[in-house]
Image (cartoon, rainbow, N blue to C red):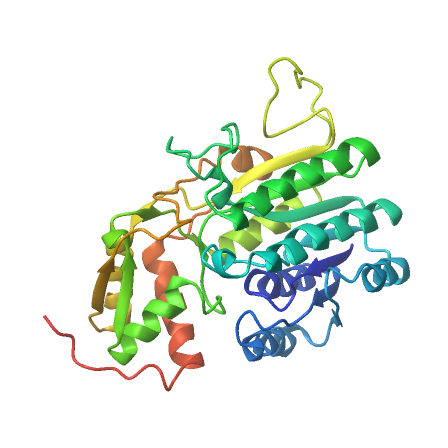
Length: 345
């Protein structure tokens, strides 16, 4: 199939391009290489992918540039769109909220419009576990309400789900939204905890542990995310014939629209996560305990039985194994940051 992957130079996007090309698909990548974090990492991801699969088409386009995006759809006519590009980060949304309107709302609207004008067989887009917000019932189910987001980032992801539903209903676009739970692994984003923690531990710098390390996260290894996407590509949703307007199912619809959680389903306290990272790095962290930050969710835990039922797969790589793979990559990519010292204490 001809597949457009947005955010192709991003963490999940680069891994996705690699897998889809290996599966025999024709992939067109799209990224704007913005400066939210060092663009060199994005270019290095692209080089890493190309070393393994050869060259692939990669367009440098900002999603908010409607005319450039339409020109790409008009010339390439993708059958499937895997939309992974977004302005990420909960805390950054407190500093620069308009960046989220630009990428996550304007950009997503442009994707939907292109999928309408140049019909696609399936639109898969990234949502986030952040949409569960103030919900404290665990595990998080796609059947739960998500009307109390705790950050603008989460609000834009919730908006994406609603926007996709309206276009699915009005124009028959098959849409699948994926709520990712704390994705980690090689080539991850430097604003996320694995790289931040690994650098701090390696350099002996103070490591900030918010909420005093008491909150939990449902970590999901990158390969499990990609396997889920690869299996869903050819499983475009259909209208649910049993959907009841009086008792509406929040995860499906009378339109061809679905939502899935993709999470490890084994939440781990940040203190335990940190201890595993210390083990693989062979060093102890210098920890600075701080209160919970605005916008942060206390605990996350995915209920992913719907994903297993639809694809025959659910995340399976344990955190200990995944962090071991991450650290091996970290030592190779950041050799100046990794300066092994004797373990203290």
